[in-house]
Every structure is written in structure tokens, then in C-alpha cells.
Length: 254
Image (cartoon, rainbow, N blue to C red):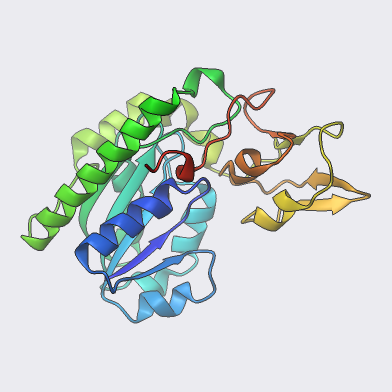
């Protein structure tokens, strides 16, 4: 078994690490940003793929990774883990259908409610203790899913028609267009930016550059919220006007 993931604040990384190590401590776990991921997928027939849902859809970067490497998925058995802040409907099904188009086989799906990574929207923030409980509940759910997998009865959350309709009418119909393309709406407050270059180093899309001592955003943001949650001076925003709370998985693992 090989676990692959795309993760901004660590939710999806934590999910796939917990799943794979519970199933087999020798499992290989690797980010889709790592150049070695292609060889890792080729060498294994069972893949666990974890990613964060955006508006009940797949982030553009993840979609491109799958569709631009169609040959990787042929005859692979893939278990999809979808992490989310509130709701996804058919998060696992969204990625699963892309992989099916590439001749992969989806063997199961799991939805995990996790601390929300949207750091600049107050309405989505939860108290620390509630987030710790969310992560603990997610871990218990992952262990249960692994036990089902070992008994040839993996969960199939997000994979049927009813999940698909929930995702469509719950969010995707109204907000799905936001992830259809990359966005140019990432904002950097020049007064707060200290030019440390951290956001530039962390951006998975190489979308941020440091120019004359200040960070400058381009037009290819995949809305992962990594830079927003990691900026030491809270200078970066996307949907909201100010950073309310930065969230990373390490805050909630006790």
C-alpha cells in the first residue's frame, strides 16, 4: 500500500499517514508535490489518496495531477480520503470519478471532518478543544475504516448517487465554479509583509515571488490556504479581509 496526499495545513497528510500506518507500518507515504511520487504509484497496485475538498470539488492542482498523469492510474486500486471543514457531499466520489476516467478502480471512500483551514473567515473557526475532538474522532473513524479494509469491507462514503446529489445541491451547484480554474485573488498586505520568503518557499504552485523585499502573488493560486496559515505576520488573505486564526494539524494532536 502506498499513501499519497495533497495537504496545506496537514489534515490530509495526517489522515493518510494514520490510515496507512494503521494498515501496514511499512507503507510508503508521499506528497504529490514530491518528484518521487510517480515512481511510488507505479510500483504499487493499491493507493490511498487523501486530499482536502473545496466547495464539494477537487482543488485544481489535484485535478491536474490526476488528469495530466492518466497513465499512472490504469488498473490501480484506489481508496480516497476526503478531508473537509464542514461538508463535502461526495468528496471521495469527486476524485474517484476522475480516477475512473483514467481506468483506475475505486475500492472505497472516507470522509473526515477536520479543523477548517480557511483562516480568514471567522464563521468557520472553532474553539481549540472542539478541533481537538474533531481530530480524535477522525482518528477513530480512520481506524474503523482500516479494520473494514482488512475484512474486505471498506467504507464507501461519497461514492453513490445520493452523495453526488448532496454535493451538487449542497455546494457545487453554487460555488463549484470557484475551483474550476486557478485564481488570481490571493491578496498580500504590503504593510504587514516582512519579506521573509516563507510563502514563496511553501507555495505548491510557485505562485508567490519576493520582489524588492515584499511578497507578490501571481494568478495561479490553487486556494490551498498554506501560505495564509503559515505566514508569520498574517499578511496573506484570500476569501476574507483578515486572518482570524491560523490552523495547522500539530495544534490539535494531543
